[in-house]
Image (tube, rainbow, N blue to C red):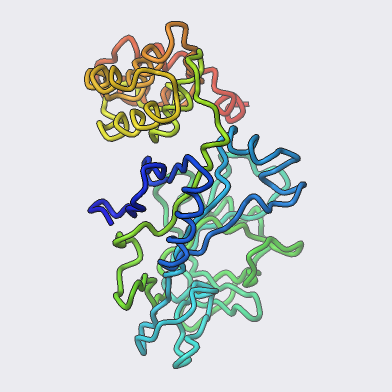
Length: 378
């Protein structure tokens, strides 16, 4: 196994590109699958998707692979919960649901709302609008079985749309029929209906936006070959990856859109409007190296020339896309969708006194045509 945690299958027809495996022959696939199962991977066979399945929609295996879907998915079943009271490994199923208990010692592993949790919500109304206000209030008690939440009569403002003490009263009075004023110990609270349910119910009166400050009495870990790792630690081998049957493909010829496939395989979004427009780096040399592996094995382009030329490509998102596209085809069709965040960023930089380049100004004007922005402003 190599130092970058990729598995060495010992055959030239199994090629890694950015964490995914591209297999060139049916014989190589059989060898790969056998080794993966020997190691302990579960391998999902997407060739068996039903004809009306989410991925298939009547397409053949060849059509699925040609459209970018992989037919195999390998993954390790290594995630475990770890009880904070007894230290036992437990199932992760439901471990972060309210009042979940450790199956070994019975201790509570998680409470969704406790005294002092900050609860952010809005009252349900027929036409709320995108910019409708929200309240943020401290929780005093939550009776999850009864479906009753008690919130201290104090409003924590700050942040987008949150109402503070000066303007929350008008909003809360508007929904006077949806809450009850009660005393809980020394605290005056509003009592609202809030059941312990993942889905909205017909009798709900509030829509929960955010809850901070939970009770955690567990961790999520990964256990591999008797060694415990933290949840996001890297294992000596990949946690999961896709396997492509590339013999179903034909070598890709130059075309005005070939760069989109190459960028995607290299981990880069092919839309210039997706990226910041101020020249900041968004692409690394490793992305170009991954693209080069794909070019060498799965296209008719000159991979040796790519290794030389790509060293001079720009690293900002729009620049990298333009350079890759121009290298692939002289008449490349480059995607540049309007993005309202380019407009917002330019406005913020302009108000801050930062000079804007011609590219940033053009992207800001172009971003004003983003359908999402038009929807928000309508």
